[in-house]
Length: 215
Image 1 (cartoon, rainbow, N blue to C red):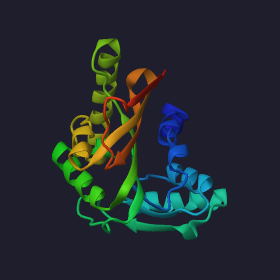
Image 2: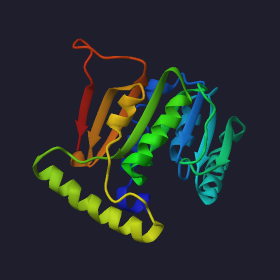
Image 3: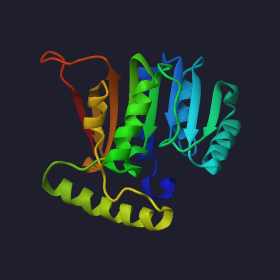
């Protein structure tokens, strides 16, 4: 479905800040789906160890098969089949966290708890990569995004019993739990965004968030 409807747009969001985390040593990837970002990270980083958590055993199998087909080293990956809303990660263990097209599946109170748990798993100065859908603040792009998001949430609630009814931006929750936005890429006329967050690094007026846009 992703390949048919979006081509490579979602994957470009997932990998937008891959160069920023090529030095990661221990990565936690949650809600990975069928392994597109995990494969890219393994290909870009020859030493990273990855813990991959997903609530779907089928998606974890798809990820294993993707790594096998690509000839990538699955021995550097530990797979855990778990519901992230009830899973407790090891504390202060990861210098990279990635949640791509995942947090949009949850209600605000669930996002807060997920971010709180994952932030406890982060090492000092950890990086957090997020890509997801986005709702622009104003103009025709806002109404376009709202229409598309409403249709998407209606479909996935009917097809998968998705708990969320609408998109909730995770920014407030990340800031509440010690992360600061460093850079954001907005694409597809404002419908998609890719973020690079960092723990324990406060910005000042001389260090603004870097925003980039690409249609």
